[in-house]
Length: 427
Image 1 (spheres, one colour):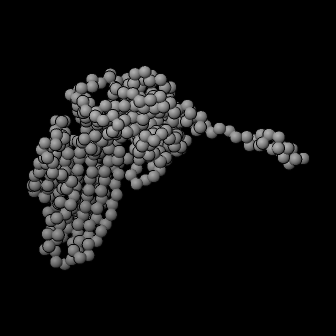
Image 2 (cartoon, rainbow, N blue to C red):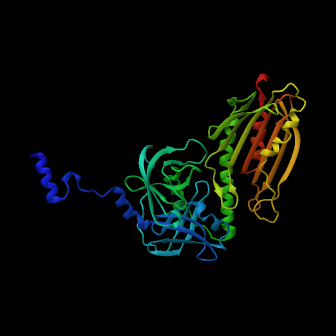
Image 3 (cartoon, rainbow, N blue to C red):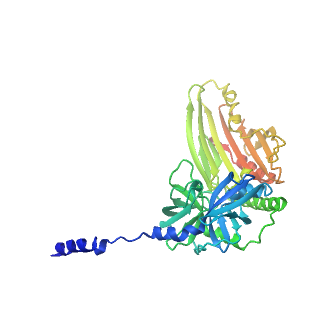
């Protein structure tokens, strides 16, 4: 009888009551959110030619949140560039209100915008929560991507939400929503060569922009604000790198081949490897570290960035007289200095110095270069490579690259790093 009753229901109603189609929550979310997600374009001269493209969303009446890197060209040259925003209702000009280079956020204002505000969540959801992300990949149309929030990335000094979802180019600046359709974050980036690992900026980082005083949109005023933020970023990065290295208690050590180094702070992402060069009779062990999620600026590239490389070289042949000759070309392979046209207006031409110096227990041959930030006095890119000269059959090598730092910050880090090098049998 039960099977007969179910069969009659199928004939009379089309489907059993328990199998009736239910419209997915994502469908309803898509329809509701669509008018509030916009395409952000930065133009230079020709209104049909885009210099940059991203996404944004309505966070308050007439106000749009997006990424700093989407509008960074405008910040650098407001006389040349303009910001345009479009959705289903058309395209119109937008005004920059505030930006945050560290957290890669910007706030825009649009007069006459008629679009619902997407509410902000009080906090990010617990790790493992389902989320959805919106954006306009390549400006082709609104896309919704479902994924999982996995908490925060453990490396780097900038907070980044770790997302299991494949964000695409052009979705930068779009909203990340919880199951209540509240904003918990903003799309910001993807992991290179990964197709389903993406990152977001937590919603709390947006609140200061909503309360900030609107910017004066002249070239000088925007440059001054960028300078202020770059200096604040440098101070934050320096303190987080230096504090563990200069702590009163002895820093933990890392063994790299036959040498020891002060272990970089936990905010660094590190890896190691060993390679044997049989023909040269040399074994090289490497330990490299860098800061993840380093902020970037349109013309300057990465800022607040630190890379460290520790290596140990050991001669494996009885005839050791040519050991340092074999190492003579190695420092140049890790120099990242580029020749610069003095008229480029962004970086000065490199200034370099080579010297022999004692640091801690070892004597090093040190090569150091710097490029000054032309428009931001007091900030530099630094490039240091150092090879120990204390032993005939083994050597310790250090590479240090710092971008967007002051001279005293670089000197403090370089001094502490070199002083922390020693050979294992010298304890």
